[in-house]
Picture 1: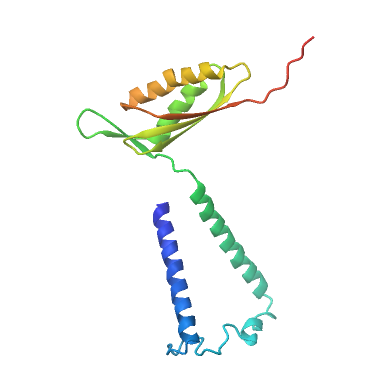
Picture 2: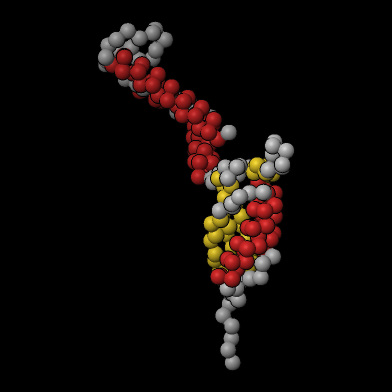
Length: 192
């Protein structure tokens, strides 16, 4: 969906810019332009003094200008943030044995993996995200480790238990996993 929105927005922006730029260039070069075109000669200005100051005395002018500009900024920010958002895998194709296959929701598999990872000893919190394609998914795991946890043991148990269970239950040949481990902040223990 985001690709379609991107292409439509870029296409519309490009079309508007090409039409406006081409019209201004045609008028500046002294070529024939349609009668409705606001600029008709090489010595014509884009905005006259009267055009620039026409609405300045009206009470509604500045609030409308500010509202429209604020809306444009919010839409641009929304679009920019949507570009940065990482693509999650919506579904995984699971071999069902009948040749057709079944679709498993990506969020469901993420939830199961997350709960199983959080049940491991020494894991305070887990965050799982499925990426890749629906026939070859990959996982990105973020673990927040408690102070007593051993990263090596936690990673081994994550691989041997949670990831292996998810791979086997979904009938996948492999489930590549990228793990990011962080230690939970804690107060220092007092020694007496």
